[in-house]
Length: 222
Image 1: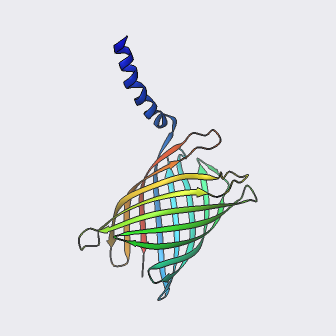
Image 2: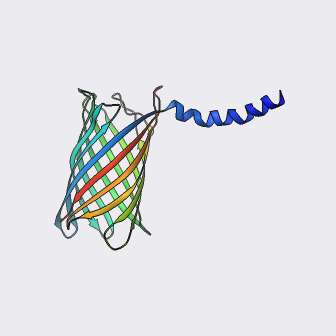
């Protein structure tokens, strides 16, 4: 009996610690992004962005975004406003689309760190309400030698400020962590390849989901 009790004391905490992993869903994904930057003036630049994401649960193409951003440089601080058109897919079925207005401020913190605070207003085609969201990101960049190769790492938290009838729920919606390497491809093009882990919290009885994504981003600059 004493041995059985000892086994229970050991196994039970391990089971409880592992329970969230068994309770969540997982998805393997591929995220692609391409951006082109145009310098308007010494302190202003415009960016055109496109995103495509693929996942196992969606059986192929899962998500697309296309839009633009206009940024002002105030010393080392960046202010920007932008727009994105967003679509989601599951198999051959197209889900309600979304239009997003966005604003952000980027502030360097020193030692390779910078923080970005982004506000978003989400307009969903399935309902009239506006979803308001804050996304806080911390980014780290470190050069590796003199060839332009660099290490990057980011952490981002999504906080929904309100609840809507079309599906947004107030509170922390998801967290993302991304780590990878960036390198120049020619004089104007840079590629970043990394691994992204995204944890989405289930709402209204839905299970949590963890996404494992390979990320590939291309940026063309003048």
